[in-house]
Length: 312
Image (cartoon, rainbow, N blue to C red; front, side, top):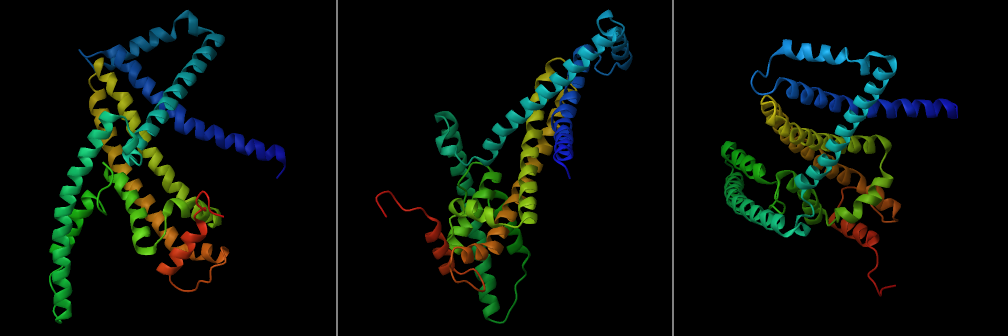
């Protein structure tokens, strides 16, 4: 493949992504906003009125010429792309709220609200976790005695606990705690610091694995961007009330997709560390065969941690 054809293919892919991620959702938003502005609250489903207004606009002298139509098309594309960029920027902010990894550095009012929510979630989690542990211990004693208990209550208790958080809550949101649980488990069960390990592990992963993780991460971004569109549709209810159920449906879908994407991404991270840290250990000169033991985790962590200031 020549350089010219490579650049042409790259430009085609970029144009497709620009169209699908920015222009098309933005054009739909502009269509709803324009239709709502024309119809208003009194008769929000008057299709004849909307058609007459669009026809009148189409017959206006400013857009009847080829030049006017070109300018109108460029303006619509620019406005649609602008709406798409606004949704992506707002989606990034929603993602930071949904994951809440840095909530302890939030401004004071938000930090206090987050702290109270974390405390409430910890209280609820502690009670459900205690119930689950009790049922699990009872089942273990029964197995030791050669008996078997009905697992339905134990499974229900586990589901009740994980609905709050997989591990003890540390963040104000379920999605944030789902990702935080990966770091907690790796530190507790494998003596690995995910923040230190991940950049080094990422560079050694096979391309298919990196592509799978990238896809999972992009799904999380798309879900929070959908939540941003819900927020952008909400103000349209001022002039057109049917925008309200649309915004609610988008918000509920975004919430569900964000939780699903966070869960999938967390599973990918944990599985990747379990399956590929051994390869990284060998690259670091650490003798390793078989399962990833705590000693190997300690050795990898020691090899990757930078020396403290003053140490040589």
